[in-house]
Image 1 (cartoon, rainbow, N blue to C red):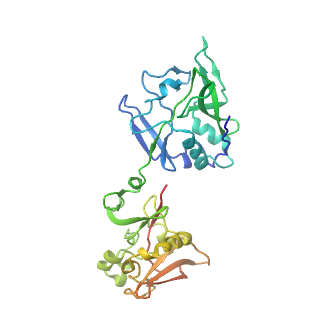
Image 2: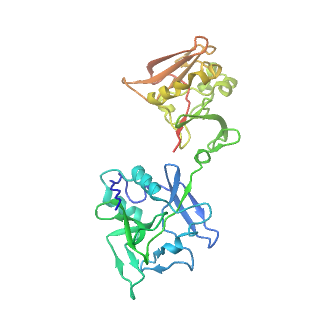
Image 3: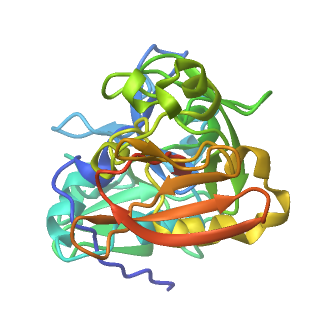
Length: 337
């Protein structure tokens, strides 16, 4: 018997790692299921309960299904997770010290399974929740995923052939759409002000290839030479604290590690975009024709933040520690997950 023992992450109930990303509506009965993201999949946060179709309902009104009913049970566009997908979920969401609490949060009111070959089926394994796994049946019954609520661990088990278990469904995530990116032109729309920015995928990250222009303070003071037209051309200057607030939800200010990874594809850069715009140094401005200065989220020395200076003509890069009050540009980045 194959076992998958994992620890659960630090989350409480359905908060943090169990936060819902989107939902799907089942056209067959109009029921809506909330979903949470994990890796490349969205997972149902509750069990499937197709009207008129459950093979068994317990006192908590949880729907249970036989192996024969699993096929086609998930709504259109979703599917029954296989063992690898369950294991990926475990590695992503269930690592940490609060495993018992988190196991109960994921299971909800799902408890045990029922053997329908019995005349009066009673709950079996009530200290665990049992879920359907896509794949071949076990040698002497059916495969199921057991979530041990006392230990907070996952284990694949074989159950009697006539057993009924709960069903969760998954669907492929549209990672670009979640970041408000149009696949056709790779433009991200900032829903805060409806401005659009070109983006590109670099490794496992999505990078804006234009400087953000979201307004946090007076627009004129955030522009090179206090020229609004240059704000439109180059983006806005931000102090270090402002830079951490400038990116849209789901995006963030890159740290030094992310900036280094970005530089691995230097041959593909547009230096005429990266290496211009200068910076705002108190009442003075850096060379806006041949340099572009960008904040990093990394901060080493007190009252300073890491910055990256890109030099257009020299095709060179300089990393420095600058006063947090200086005005530099921001390129936002998002994780592909």
